[in-house]
Image (cartoon, rainbow, N blue to C red; front, top):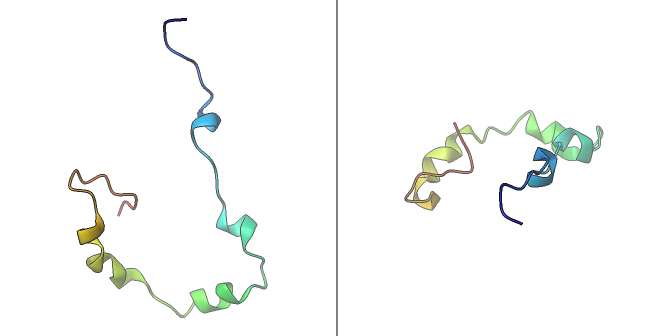
Length: 58
């Protein structure tokens, strides 16, 4: 059959919630308050695509 195929957007993407997967009492939640990974982005540009389709948008 020719023509556009109708897909629900949910079939194209998946949802992931860190809140739903990391228990409230997990050690990572307490560590996250003290670790700043903000400076790591300056080291990542060599790993981006040459077409600038980054997976992380700032």
